Length: 492
Image (tube, rainbow, N blue to C red):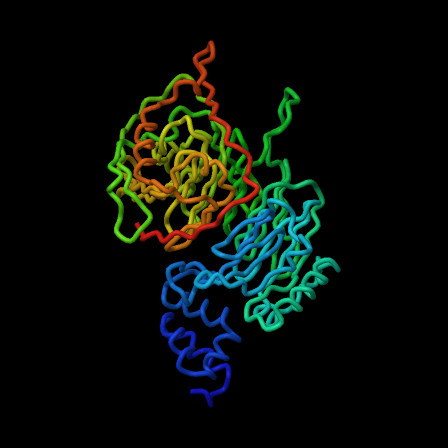
């Protein structure tokens, strides 16, 4: 096979079972060189073919050593396995802890607490002035047409040159691709290949990352307040091929990418978002899944179709659309998750939010919601009382026949650490969480069960007209130092 043309060899290797690739590297020196030189393309194509992932880096299979390399970004001193870095972009081998490539740490190149997005070989992170840097996997860079717009500046090129000196023989490295300057002050952004969505207070922009072109502007993200009050903060944004999702404190808005118009609004003042309501109940700490970090949570389901006269004012923390584009997950401030299956049916008028939504209380309302992720058919939620994995199934018509399964990460239960979570990422078999694991998970599970009964006393304030205001306890600021762990999570 070595004598075949290079293109044919690469095609053959893409059809080889993933775990066999590692064996080939060990038994043949020439194959090892070929695989190392084209590692990104070979592993990604093989992973897609065999159903391991959908067009993303091999790092998504955390329990597979030959697939274990990932991109991490932090803006303060941190530890990713055994690798230390500061103000840098690191590519680390999760199997060995080896730093495969990084920007020069002495430059302190990346701003403190920068937000990072990754997909299809592109890394996006922000600068202090709000502009967005885009770097691309070098193996993809060399075989792609270069962008004609928003080219990298000298600062990016200098940083890249220094990284080449530090890692001259690295098989995994990134090159500067774009520098996107924003026309207004922006806050939230989300990258779903090939589109980067960047949002200001009342205006959002969509960029095509392969070309650097700005392809769409969405105006009027928020309604003009007749009283002249300040507009909401935008806490989160997301997008798919058909819609843009803007998560304000008081309302979730869904915009059509075809027309630019708002097609769905969900206010954060509902007592019940769905007729189907779920709550966690006491559970034994020993009910853990073998060879997993998860413990099954017991849930109680109620169906309540009454329409309360009063309102309950809460705040949306985050919103995500499922990778398939069919379902939404909304996170409210007091450990409350709202799952909206087949939301397109609400937009088309076939059903209502109350008939379809799953209203899930993840522990006591006393504890603030912190982070939300939605990947691989599962929803991950971090709150000040725990880290949860939620999976839902739908009945024949999706109304009153749905059910959920909730698991808690057993060793992530110490509030002193949970409040410092600044990022939660989920793959098909694992989680990335910057939170120390508990030294005594059984004790923390007992405390968690006790806290389930704390209810809402002290955080729900009733107004004279019967309306209620929910005020969750404020979590502490992001920790200056954190530890990033990858946890094996058996699929549920």
